[in-house]
Length: 416
Image 1 (cartoon, rainbow, N blue to C red):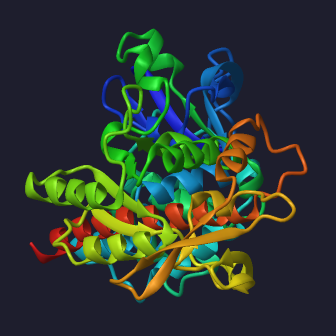
Image 2: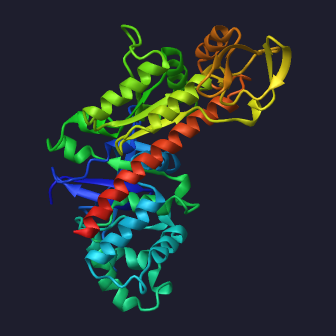
Image 3: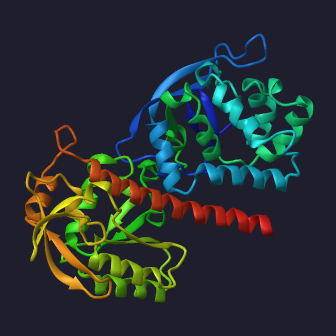
């Protein structure tokens, strides 16, 4: 039989391999996700059930485990979104000439949304490709005979299309199942590890270098705040984002240097994912516009901090005295997105001739930054609402970038 490895949601195994032949799912998990998880083996003392199935025994052994909802967030940053899942389904249906009217993406979605994952038996035998598994096991277990119009045809014809369907499409659809959404995704690797078919570091978890997003900002303060924000608010995604090594000083301070750095990466054809992030002040907006006009590669995005309603009426001081002003695009640097003390205000200073507006700066921004960086967790009464919007903006743009790359690969495969 060999050493088996499984990726499961509850007792529903959605991917498996044998010996050294398995898909690496390490990017779904992180360091610290190691846990004792259930493994199911055929009971050698009482193998067969009366219906031809297997009697199983459960043994808890080391594996990786993470809640399905958090796994889905990580999948999206890998580019495996709902749009990608639909494209993948269409691709394999087309390759295998499956009748997409008889068996649609919605048919599979409905079946996975409504199945009782915990009620399923794990007695699948010795493992088989997804097409055979779909035809012999999943079709009946999911109740598809009650959903499709031509069950006999679909059982056999659609199975060919399902043979290479990824576990990640199945995970996306299971996330809409209220019973499955409460369950962990587990990767049961102990047998291949003990059998010497893989090294322990294979199962450490974490995004690989090619899957990460390099965030380049105007200065070290921006990078430190964003990195700390991810650690506090989105720890299950933090390993997807990396920043320039600042141990020897931040090398890209200033708008002009950031624009030139972007030009440099374009010129050398840098292939990793990069987000160039500018402040939402006058200089940042100007730099953002200049960088956007570059011929950025498909793996690059020029972004600025988002406009917020909170900034439309913000306390400011200048030559004409104290006023409430809209600081979006004029003075909203990263510190403005943190919790601000009573009486916080922006001081107007330089005039930006390129945009025809004044550049402003938050007074005592260093103290605001230090208070945020001193936070060890989110259990305080600190107001994270604005910095959360910044991080969500970065996550959304990263997902869109990864999604476009994955869909482009499927589209290219369809055109061949």
